[in-house]
Picture 1: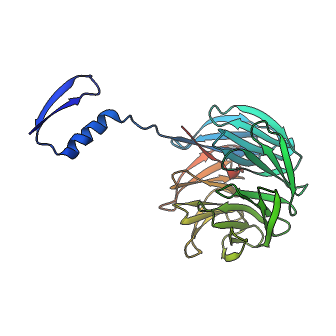
Picture 2: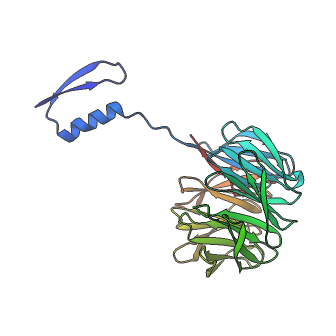
Picture 3: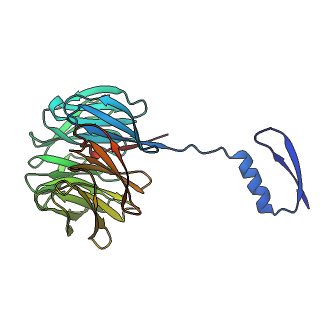
Length: 338
């Protein structure tokens, strides 16, 4: 028989409990008394509305638009910098990109590059942001402390989507008109490899282990799968009409691909490299991102001005959210804040 004094966390009084308890039970009570409750991270989806010149901010807990921020220059690309709590929005007509504060949703500054800014991505340490120039055929590299231009890297024709390897060593770029993907060494800012893929690649996705890259080929209606080491082609999967972008979910076991002309999202099993389903979404889907929990996928529907939310487990639509005119959100557009 052991007498345990348990602290009542609500009344701050002590209560005697006489009972047979195991040592495990004593430890459990002590842990409950001393461990604070954990805060739950909130995540937000930043949806660029090109024709409205603004960004809709969706609280992914309620799946409601909680704020709309004006971003002029026909916003398209989106990149989240979790380390700096920044969100970068490319503005091709605004000659550069805008920087939003991911905590208070305020516009912090505008950065000038050129009139072809489209794809945009941040490295994982949050130290650099990369901007693909559609017309100048280069990648501009900026420091995220003062947004000083560090260098420009010449690539193929009409660069669009980009991804950074998990270790921040490599940048991968889709060269749309050249039908290729380039691998750039971020230590030297030199191209290491370039590989031909399908017709007019646009969006790129890299897995969490940094082993595979998935390339959405708009004109050949397929997805190319490349190894990150050497850009070797390991497979190709036929999908719907004009695939633009993709996102991995459920621990990278499923790849979701937006098919712009079919108003669908293809679901690919990444083990068998087969399409297992097509899900109806809104008109002209383009941008797509997975929620940090890996169980939901958000799809920006360009012509509908909506975002479709897909349950990655059941492969069904959970809800559709009204956003703005010309919702594109090309890139990784979901952030996570505490």
